Each structure stands twice: as C-alpha cells, then as structure tokens.
Amino acid sequence: MPLLEGQHVSKSFGGVQALTDVDFAVEAGTVVGLIGPNGAGKTTLFNTVAGAFKPTAGRIVFDGTDVTGLPANTICRMGMARTFQVTRPFAGMTCLENVMVAAINRHPQKPRTFIESFAREKLGLTGLDALAATEARHLNVIQKKRLELARALATEPKLLMLDEVLGGLNTQEIGQAVEFIRRLRDEAGLTILWIEHVMGAIMQAAQQVIVLDQGRVLMAGTPTEVVNDPRVIQAYLGE
Amino acid sequence: MTGKKPALVAALVLASLCVLPLGLGIYPQHVLIVSLFYTMMACSWNLLAGYTGQVSFGHAAMAGIGAYTSGILAVKAGVNPWVGIAAGTVLAAVLGLALGALCLKMGGIYLSLTTLAFSQILHIVIVNEYDVTRGTMGLQVPGLMSEYSKLGYYYIMLAAAAAVLAVIYRMIHSNLGLNFRAVQNDELAAKSVGVRVLHVRVLAFTVASAMAGFAGGLYGHYLLLITPEIPSLDLQFKVLAMTVIGGMGSLVGPVLGAFALNILEEYIRGYGEYHVLVFGLVALVVARFAPNGLLGLWRKLRRPAPAAEEAAAAGGRVRDASTGS
Image (cartoon, rainbow over all chains, first blue to last red):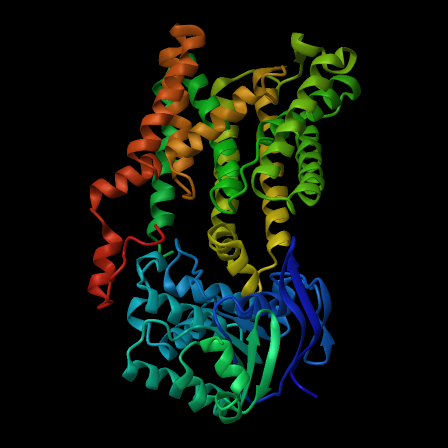
C-alpha cells in the first residue's frame, strides 16, 4: 500500500478548475518528483494534500487513513510535513524558536532542554547553527528555505513535501542539496514528494515522477520514461 | 529567558512599587491604583493582540462582566466581594470561551466586529436593565475592606497586577507562548508544523477574558460605584492605545503604556472632551515614529539595529535583510 494516495482529487476556486480528477500514489521510502509547467497545479495539489485546502472532490489517503478535509495541523501530527514555495518562516522569531515550534508540537511532554537541543540538531542538519539566535526575517531567501526544511524535519515526518527548494542555488549547491535529499531517504527513511523545476536534480534523486499539466495528471513513470515522453515534451515546449 | 536577570529586575521594580505610594497623597495614590487596573487590562489584551494577533474589542466588556457580576451578587445576594470577584472571573472566562469558540474561526476583521457587537450589546443591556444594574446611575457596591484605605487598595491592586503579569510571563515562556507567537506570525505555517491554531486562539481568548473579568471585579469594588463606563468602548480604546503606545507583543510595553497614558490623562483632563484628541495625536505620533511603542523606542536608542549586527556577526549572508520586515 502506498504511503500517500490521491483518488480522483479535484479542486476548483470559483470557476477556475485548478485540479481535475488527479490520481497519484507515493510509495514509502521513495523520492517522487512532481513536475509540470507553471500553473499546472503542483502547489495546489500540495496544499490540498497537506490540508491547507479542502478538495472539491476526491479522496486523499495517508498512511492508511483517509485525511481528506482534515485540518493541516492534524495531518502534520500524523506525519506529513511540508515547505512552502514562497517561504513562510515565523518572521519575528529566531531560527531556533522557529524550529522549536515544530519540536514542541511533536514532543509536547519533553522538557525545554530536550526541545532546544533537538531543534539545534535540526538547524545543524541544514547548516543554520550559526544563525540560531537571528530573527528569521533577517535571513536571505536560501536561508529561509533551509529554515523551513529544518522546521519540517523537526516535526519528524514520514512524508516530507518539498516545494521548489532549489530555487536560487548554483550548480554545486544543487548537487549538495540533492545529496542531502537522498540521504534523508536512505538514512532517515523518509518518503519525499518533491516539486521542482530543476529537472537534472529530479533525474538524479527521484524513482518516480508525476507530471501535471493544466490540472490533470499527464503521466507518471520513471524519470527516464518521463523525459522521453512526447506528451511531456509537448507540454513544456508547446505545439 | 536567560538566567536570573528578569527575576531580579522584577523584584526590584516590585519593591520600589511597594514603597512608591508611601510618601504620596491620596490623589496620586488613586492615579497609581487606576494605572494598575489599566496595567492588568493592557497586559491581558496584549496577550490577545500582541501574542496571538487577535484584535478583540470586547476586552472592556469582559471587565464589565467581572465588575457587574461581583457587584450584583454583593448588592442583591450579599455575597462576599472576594467570592463575587472569583465568580466574575469565571463568568468572563466562560463568556470568553463561548465567544472565542463562536468567532475565532472567522479570525481577522470578523473577530474584531463580533467582539465589537458583543461589547455594544452588553453596554445597551447594562444601561437599560435599570432594576438590576441601576443603568447609568451606577451600582453602589461594598468595598473590599471594612475600613476604606487607599493604601490597602493600592497593595491589593499591586498584588493582583503582579499575579496577572506572573501568569502571563509563565505562559509566554512556556510551549504555549511559542505556539502563541507562531500563530501570530503566520497562521498557515503554524498549522503546517502541527500547531492547533484554533485551540491556541480560544485558550488565549479565555485566559485574557478571565484576567479582564478579574481586573474589572477588583476595580468595581475599589470605585465603590460600577457604571457602564467600565464596559465601554472608551475604556476599550484606551486599553488599545496603552498597549500599542507602550509596545505590543512585549511583556513590559503595555505596563509602560498603561502608566504613561493614565498619568498623561490626569494632566490633560482639564481639556475636557479634547483629551481624547490628545490621546489620538500621541497614538499617531508613536505609530509613525516608534511602531514598536515606547519599549521599542527605548531598545532602538540603546542599541541601534541590533538584529542586523547579530546576523552579520553570525556569519550569515544577509542579502535581503529588508524582506519580510
């Protein structure tokens, strides 16, 4: 049974149909890429899965439980964490506090000393140790993305959903980030659903790729199958 | 947060507040007592607006609930004022819980409007239910002591304000406080890391309402005459101005604001209705030149742009320090 499954998921905003009858599955222990042209509905699908939006129709099953329409905080507690495409750190709080918020909601009974060292460890993982006492609003975009990743990891998720975490990185940094994501899968045992425009990165890390176009699943397959599919090429390049 | 410094400062401030009224006359003592009432009001309103981002206009109404509950119980049933104040606190908490559960899901401007409506309804009921509340004539209630003593009231209010502040301090330095601030900073992000946003907001609303009820109850038994002035929008906006001018979202700011504005009000009382105008001007100037209030101004003067320095010292690449501020 897949860790995450969407069945006939649709979402519309007023008259705009953002997602139509989307079926997808994410197997446990894999990295799954979610790609598609701008406006294809990738982030909408994330929001619908993570509980920020309620789907207009369809069902979302996570870890054997129907989570359709549950609030985001409940879904998070069940083991799903996410980052945001446009970062949403707690701007007026320090980096450490940002991560501590996630930590206390995962471990509400643990003492403050545990929470702090736990949060510092997650900041260390994403290379933000030196900025622990800095307010998040002073970070640059890349640091904010790292902070969101640290915060998501501090919820100790089974499924980690990343929304364009590579934006603004150079080639070398992308390589490091891909390596980091692989390690999360192989060493920490995380399942990762990953929206990304950097195709090279997806090719290196993902076992499976889902292609969205105009709110529908265009195809799903291995990275090699996807990049060689004429429909995908057409969706990206046009007629 | 760090070490014993805040405790030491708090002890020093409390000690000096204990000796402060000794050399003063009746009138300055009265001003201080009222300031302590406003301290409780502003600090608890700050718990809502400053820490969880919920702008409620029903806070003065909750003080009114506390005052009238205790007053009516004392007058109609001869209940001991202390028991009455406890009852008023509980009733304010229950109403806060109900109002919170009813409208916090709406959030934002809808919360403000609903609490405004609640406040107005309560005001109208109190003014018109003459048999029970004595309307605008006011309800004469017994005092807290058998023998009236300004100094006695001062110490009662001081103890109460210290207790309210201690509870708030404990809350904001616990897990709950982190959740409060997360909700205020970004509700959606807070949800996404597992914060039970509704739960947190309703809790803040309930606790803050209870504190307002408690403060109102004490205040009524100090004034000995409870009028619809307590649950009025005038009082509500004064509390709002005190919090904003003092420094929203900080522990000390609303205390400064409460004392500063209440004392200022005594000086400008001579201008009659125009004193509201002066209040508005002060609020305007502060909002323009010191958006973080008096406390923010003080911090800014002490160390210019501390956060940017910190970030630079920490070796971070501060490329867009201006974003998101």
